[in-house]
Length: 273
Image 1: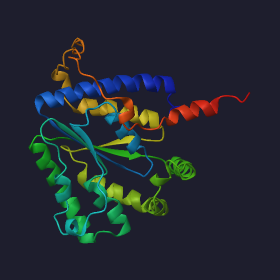
Image 2: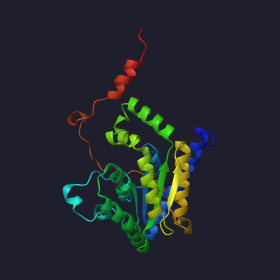
Image 3: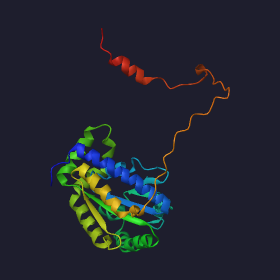
């Protein structure tokens, strides 16, 4: 494993890649493409951080993250893929699945939330389902974020001490730590059945978060043929503001304003005399 990526190099390259992502989105909009990206992997492997950097400068009207919760009673009676289909993109849209239909191959399999028959059917149907998506023109990419046992433990410990990130550690995550080998077996079985020529898995090594983000974004850009050319919106000169036409605005005292909390910080920061 190479040494950790220096922050200065990371930030410069991240900025460049994010500019490329914006250009890629122009192409997706112009060509009416439909893009689906799946993010799977170990807990605390860096999926969320990569998704946030991808989404940071994209137009949220046409790019969104889908992170589904526990299925409802009604959804449990549907075809397994049905609730995911409802979130697939229309023309010109990008959808990032923060975990996806592969829950059945991972947590549901390991924790016993599905029957062996349901799991077997999933492994059979998934390559067919994904082939149908691709044949219909959807640009599908699947990422598996990998992290070592030692690094995952360090990240969990850090999260549990941080009140802003403690929510990221659920009882399910802790149980998954106890079943590390079971998850490894389930993942390997999943790969055997679903790592196909038309819909391959791409593994992202996640021990170095910064490197993982850059590697994932750089690779994703190679999966979308946006270099065919998509012109960004033309630059416009800012016109002068229109005249007031004699309009007089109401007095400030007639409006309700948010209290100036920031001013209290400045005052409290002044040294006492």
